[in-house]
Length: 130
Length: 243
Image (cartoon, rainbow over all chains, first blue to last red; front, top):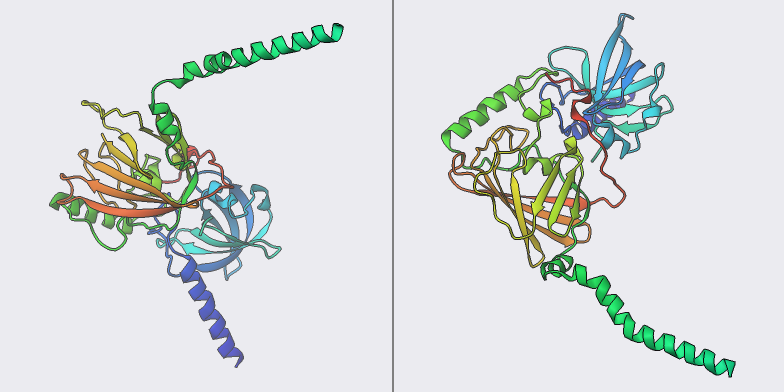
């Protein structure tokens, strides 16, 4: 039963990911990213670039073996993000974040952000508009 | 006696004021009365405000391909292939290197734009790349020898409640949509913009480009009023990672 519930939850999570992962960024095509297989990652912020055309969040993420990899997580323009509640100050170096997004198809450690979750549980849309 | 004199003085002031007032009003209005077109513009429909696309489509024609000339179809397929085989920090779309998207694509980007109606022009202020477009409303035509530009040369007029915009003089350096739909420097864009309700603007774009397409074709977009939004600065080259 528990196993069945987990499968149902996993299915819902995947479907949610598919629904919100439409390629909505204006500046870059999403073709380089695997939008159909979004992944979740937890990491610690090392830096954030609050810039146009896109916001970049740099995250230290521990892999399964315990070694740390740096990922670049790319959100939409800060202009659009602030319209959905983002603030520059809400992400600082040292913060723990949960990100859901589409990893690059070529294996490089860059991701197109779909959803951001802060340590306090607050969720934000990485595309900045609906 | 003193009171009577005061009353006379008051009456004199009132009489002078009554006769002089129209002169003052005339003096104030005369320089601005001008030709009739001033009044015509003030009676025009008001489209001013910040507008934002209702739905985003990567294809300017969401359901079909336009009627290509052979070279345009081949170029479209080449761009599609390059788009699909791109790396994260590269890409063939000129906008990814901060080149303006041209018209109509600048209006179709997922960023807001504002309409400001001046006496002789309609001004569009685009947040994306901080671009502007001016549409001349004073009855002028297109110049004969236009230097090709990204935004083209736009003239407009109100037909009833519809703003009709005619734009020519484009260069051929832009894509019509992120998929890579091409156009030539012969492109002629005709727009019919209507405010169908307080919060909704509809723009029908007709693309007439005989060098690139065998027939003209039309697409339509809906924009919603965003009364609480302001156009913000957007400096594309600030931190652009696409080479």
